[in-house]
View 1 (tube, rainbow, N blue to C red):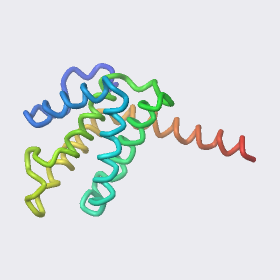
View 2: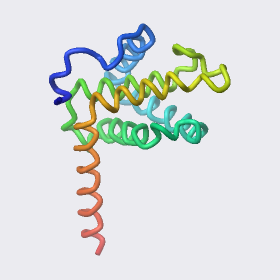
View 3: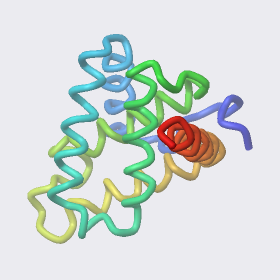
View 4: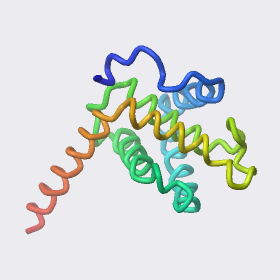
Length: 144
């Protein structure tokens, strides 16, 4: 299913709706979006072992949103970008559905949200990975 025709968000919870609002605000200002990416990157660095199930997807979401914010990758559909930013906003919020202070359980909902978003926009994430690989190959050729 193309992410351009997704009719509803990957999750229908109050916490994800709040994350969508945060994502919309972040996408309206580049500086906000870059702060969100930075905060999510730092949080991932501290919790990478606990997020092993979705670590690769989360890294890809971060890189895609950052590339969009830097105006390097602009072909991502708006809805996919919104969901990716919402997943990051949900991830950085310490008071989401299961507060992160609940040792052992606090990241379970973060993993579920990241996984659901990654599934919903899988085709766009794959296109982004292909774009990255092509860009990397082209940059390697320029330096050779």
